Length: 285
Image (tube, rainbow, N blue to C red; front, side, top):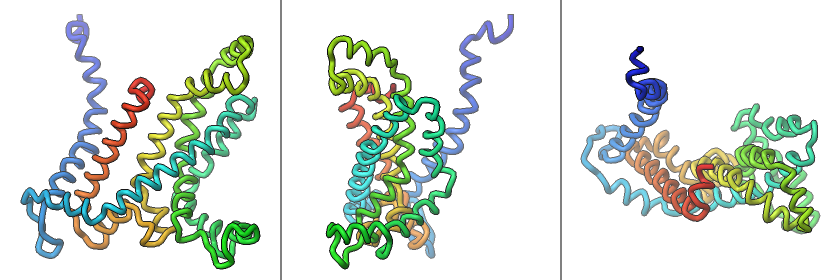
């Protein structure tokens, strides 16, 4: 009898070991160092020392509360827009796409084959003051003759929505594609209208995809800084822009680390509230 037969618990532990080691080296250790750094004081010129400086956290919240709020507002709006755009799109692909389903999915993820930076820069041309979008909106009198879209919150949210749309679309497609169409036929046989069948059958069964898509969209969007940097102004700065500035420009590592921890904590609190609202079963499904 081998050692694995005598100690059945050993095989699962050995299988988990590479993953646990990876998490320890590339997640737990850097996170611990970030927490250590957030409690330091000093400057780049004089050096930093660990002094349990919890004031870094209070100062960060006081000074950058607007950027925190703006980040969550922009991320929330972009997540809702992604859901409203992606759901009917992937619904049609799942139930009407036929043999062209894979092609339509490739079209959705095709932007991922281009650099994130290039995709965002493309919006500079799309929303340019002399571009076609602004021209049409001015012609329709939706924008004033001197109105513009660039350097506004609209441009930042539009860029975030575009860049993170596939994160919403793919989980939704997986949930919708797994729905047995016979359930919809059964709802019709029971005299349910198409709207009733959608609300009672399709929407509940696609809920895990909605939950997964909103999480995959909102969490990275809240920490994004490229869209605000390129499509906005200092008035549209998000907390990611502040963290980048603290690290690379001001070289204030303790403040940047504290801001990063606060952002993670706020996202975890939001995730806990979201889990309570939608239910842990849908969250883990």
